[in-house]
Amino acid sequence: MAETVTARRRIVLDCDTGLDDTLTLIFLSGRPDVELVAVGSVHGNVSAVQGAHNSAAVLKALGRPDVPVTVGARRPLAQPVQYSARVHGSDGLGEIPIDREVRVRSDSSAAEQLVQLARRYPGELEIVAVGPLTNIALALMIEPDLPSLIAGISVMGGAVTVPGNNTPWAESNIAHDPEAASLVFSAGWRRCVLAGLDVTLTTWLRPAELAAIDGLATPGGRLAQQIIRRFSAYFSVAYGRQSCPIHDPTAAILLLHPEYGQYQPWSVQVELARGLTRGATLADRRPFVAGKPEPPHPPIEVATGLNVDALLECFVAGIRAAGTAPGQQTEKEARGE
Image (tube, rainbow, N blue to C red; front, side, top):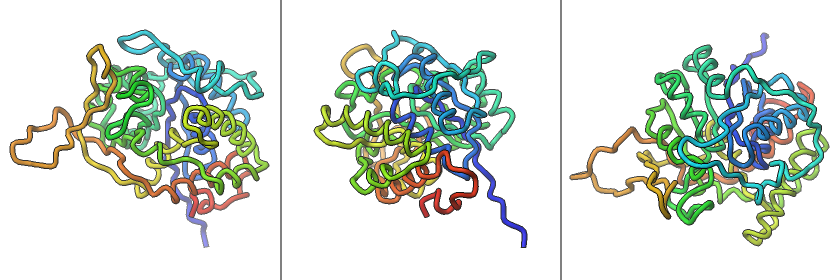
C-alpha cells in the first residue's frame, strides 16, 4: 500500500531574531508538515543585519543552511530605530556560543523576497511575523494584491485587552513601528491572526516542559536549553519567575493549529499620534449592534484565549524534533498528538 504524503505548508518567517524568535525557528524547523521557505530579518530586538546573521547561525546549528535568510528593513517607517539589548543581550542571542560563519542573501530585501515568493506560490504561502511589521508593510507597498496572494498571516504583537510591555499601552513589536502595524492590520488578508500579550503571557513554560526540554540531546534541544536559560534570566528579574513565556512561538502554533485558540473578530486600529499611547492596539469591543458604526477596515482574528496544555505540548514536540535525522520521529509525535 502506498504511503500517504502530507502536503507541507509553505511558511516565511519574518523576525528580529532575539531569544524567542530563535525558539520559533527551532520549533518550525522541527515540524515535518512545514516547509520553511525563507526567513526575513527586521529591526527590533537587534539590527536587521544582526538579526539576519542570528537566523542564519541558528539554522546552521539545526542543519538547515538551505533556508535562505534575507536582510530586511533597517529602520521603522516614521520614527527612529530602537533595539532591545536589555532583554536579548547585545547580540540578540544572549551571548551564547554559536557558529557565526554564515552568509545571508544580499540580492534582494526581505520585503522583495516575500513578494517574489507570494507570486511564485499564489494562495499557498503563509507568514509568521514575530517582529516589527515593517517588512510586511513594505511588501504591501510593492504588491497591493499581497493579501489575496497570501493564504494567511499570524502576528505576534499587540495588547488589546491587557497592558503593554514597551509602554503601559503598547507592546514592543507594535511600538517599534506603529505605522507599519496600522498598514498590515488594515490590509484585508484572507486570514490574519493576532497573537498578542493577551494570550502569550499565559504561555509560561512549566516544570514539566522545562524538564522535557532539558532532557534533550538533539541540536535543537541543546540550543533551546541555552536560549530558555537566557530568556528566563531576564524574566526572573522582571517578573520574579524562573521561567519564560513563549511569545513568538505562540504565533506560529496558532497559524498551524487554530483550534488551540479562542478568537474575537475585531477590527484593530493602532494609535499613531505622538504621545503616551502611541503604538496602542485598539479594538471596538462594544457588544451592541444597533447604532454601532461600520469598522474602518475588515476584522482580524484577535486571540483572546488558549488551550495552554495543547499549545505547550505542541511546542515541546517541535523542539524535540528539531535537528534530528529524518525518520527519527513520526509526524504525529512532532505535532504533539
